[in-house]
Image (cartoon, rainbow, N blue to C red; front, side):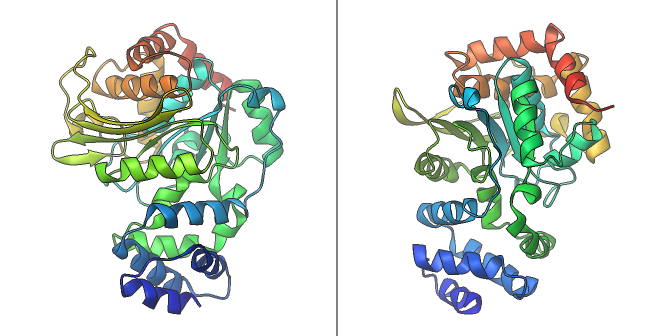
Amino acid sequence: MLSSLTEHLKSRQGLNAEQVAEAIKGLTAEAVTPEAKAEFLTALAQKGETVEEIAAFAHGLRELSLTPPMDPSLRAGEILDVCGTGGDKLNTFNISTTVAIVVAAAGVPMAKHGNRAITSKSGSADVLEALGIPVDNTPEQAAALLKEHNFAFFLAVRFHPAFKHIGPARKLCAAAGQRTIFNFLGPLMNPARPTAQLVGVPNPALTEPMARVLQSLGIRRGMVVSGMAEGAHLDELSTMGDNQVAEFYQDRGFHTSKWQAEFLPLQPATLADLAGGDAQVNAVIVRQVLSGQERGPKRDAVLLNAGAALHVANKVKSLIEGWELAAETIDSGKAAAKLKDLSTR
């Protein structure tokens, strides 16, 4: 069945809900070879995934995930996730993961969903491990950590056991330089079912479609962003150029915009200023930002994205207020204290 769907995609025909369900069966089946799965994922990406296809894959795969026993008191407010889809190939440090710790320190429950590196040198799980933060939590452990510390990491392979049989195909695609639909699906698959999300994508044209998918999944407050930097597109808000944004909130509907962050006290920056490395290198950068030792462009990138995250979580009323709260959270020592609190060493 997966082979016939691959041929269907190669003829530039889309998938309906029933075909997506069949594709999920094939992708999660141990008997289907990684090569056949990679060929399907490549054909889907080359055709171009539609909003309907991404939403159908997200709905279907979420049904196969483990559900953490979340405390009802957390559900009374906003639960936030912040992540980029990856795939921008710009080798920046782990901005979203740094933002997640800042936001948790500012008092927002942060259900961070992520994985180990597939298309980069350091995934969110890799850098958190290097920081001494537990990542391979059981559903019960993750739920308890979120309640007690305002932060828990939900490792994709732990909560999505079906992904075990998809990983090898994704690696084949990554080795060939081919992104897949799972770059989009990662932010949509959080087993904690966050109510608010800030998602970064590496293509401005994807901001509105991804935001529409988030809405279809029941997210109450969402923002999808893509930032311009030196002719390239970050899967983050950029301090260096235009930002394409699609956002929606329960109280004021759906909105798209393009803007530069010139209203903030930004320092001159280049992509080289945001460069990262492997997990150990990035862990050093994260510690420097959270401790307040780093005062340059890396800090600005974190403050900008943390400001947006705090706004999406309804902790503040504007991005400017969010920037100020994020700066205060770092400068007061709260961010460094949160990192110490989360770390097991």
